[in-house]
Amino acid sequence: MHRLQFHYTFGSQPQDRAGLIRNPLFDLLYAVQESGSISGAARTLQLSYRHVWGELKRWESELGHELIVWEKGQSARLTEFGNKLLWAERQAQARLSPQIEALRADLERAFAVAFDDSVHVVTLYASHDDALSALRMHAASQHQLHLDVRFTGSVDAIRALNEGRCVMAGFHTLHQPGPGSLAEQTYKPLLKPGLHKIIGFAKRSQGLMVAKGNPLGLQSLHDLARSGARFVNRALGTGTRVLFDELLAQASISANKIKGYELTEPSHTAVAQAVAAGQVDAGLGIEAAARARGLDFVPLVEEDYHLVCLKSALDEPAVQALCNVLQSQGWQEVLHQLPGYQLADQAGQVLSLRRTLPWWNYRTEKSPSGARPKPASQRAQERKPQKMSSRPGK
Image 1 (cartoon, rainbow, N blue to C red):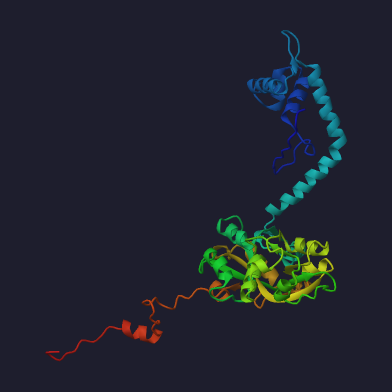
Image 2: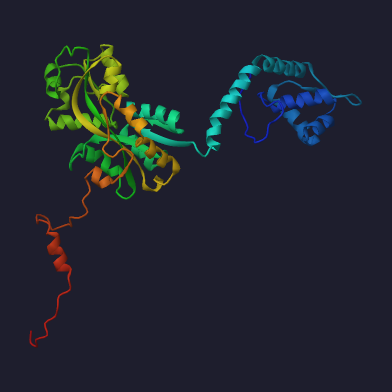
């Protein structure tokens, strides 16, 4: 059984038989059949005699059958196999031409985006988020902006940005997580002030997703640990896993006190489905995912969802278009309809990485071990040149 592979070409001018899926072999066979000679086929196809002859021999070797009967003094003609092959191709084209034409039209519409200067595309790797899914639909339908979103863990998203695999990354943290936090340990090595810029996006609630009516009465992580409730976690490298471990540390709860800590799901939706199916009693996630599955939601914390890009990308038309969408009234109305979401204070605006995530402090100079840094005024005074005394003998 020979396998088929499909290919397509670009062209600015309409071509003959444009609606067909074409293969050069059948062009060769048809030309030989119509002209009755290899040289006639070569003239019809505007190819050299040697090329046509070589291609026919190559195809015979590939297919394991002779294609041409050519005896001295007689016209070239197709073998029985060649005739059957050409007949089969014509039958398939006749039956499938409507579907082929529809496929061609769909491809042309898709690729038209690349040639339309008013349309923009942003490749975005991001931690799973319902607001981003809503933004993707809104931006495409209302603003001719297409978000090519790949949902992955927050750490992998920022790495993809740094490796040039995307234009923007999405990750989330507690509001201004302090020095020494797990968020700092996780994200600080991946981000660099002056190189990266934050774009304001949204605030969202994270909490426990539980069955309708909250039958176990869970109201906190202490309740989760004490009750022995079955829990489902998120994978290492995800922002929600970082958040959960941060909250456990703040509450002085050991991970081994959480039943199911090692059990993971890949997204908020998957966690909600596990709870809805009764496989577990609770999972940490966003309110929108819980409500969509008919679950109750116990809010624990509000966090910031950040979009980050390289400073060098800020002037790109696609990034500017995204910022305009985030500041638009239409998008704000869409976001307000999502449970557990609020607009960021500076949505769509470029923010300083150092002010949004206050982990970097370049104002404090290094001092000897155990010594307190000198005040800035004292350091400035010490840097001033000292006047030499004019009195002799001093």
